Image 1 (cartoon, helix red, strand yellow):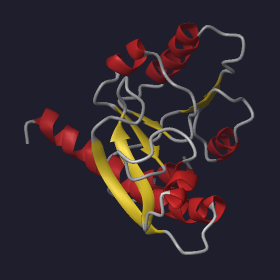
Image 2: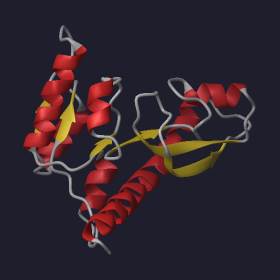
Image 3: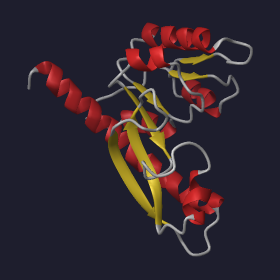
Amino acid sequence: MAALLYASRLAGCPYEIVLVAANDPQAEALTLAEAEGVPVFALSHRGMDRAAHDAEMEQAVRDAGAEYIALAGYMRILTDDFVQRWAGRMLNIHPSLLPKYPGLDTHAKAIAAQDTQAGATVHLVTEDLDAGQTLGQAAVAILPDDTPERLASRVRLAEHQLYPRTLAEYVAHHRDDTDGT
């Protein structure tokens, strides 16, 4: 989230962050966003029906005037209805070179498979977990003595470069399409 936020403030960036929302009211991203003057919304999903939670999150997003949703660290599967309403306008970043290793424990899986590279993928969100169209990838070498934690640290650096660039390119391209240019 921080990488997306700070990149949005660079000259020429085609997107702005209008809301940071979280299903964990203690998420560090909320504190940072508030400090940077970005509106926040937090609603714990605990004890809530999934569809009701998604509806409240979506209402907050719509009230903020968002045109796109960029998931960053949101570790909850969204309802199919929510995903369908934002089809083509909701992106996610995943810490693997999809289609390899959807879901959790991606770094451990890549090391166990003796892959030479891991990385990150920005993709469109669909009803199927980590299966949407790939918009960008960044590869990271797996070192002989890597642990999942060390590899995750390097992949995170790649994510911080990849996600803002890919989001900016995607938004700019779609704005050009809707402007008729």
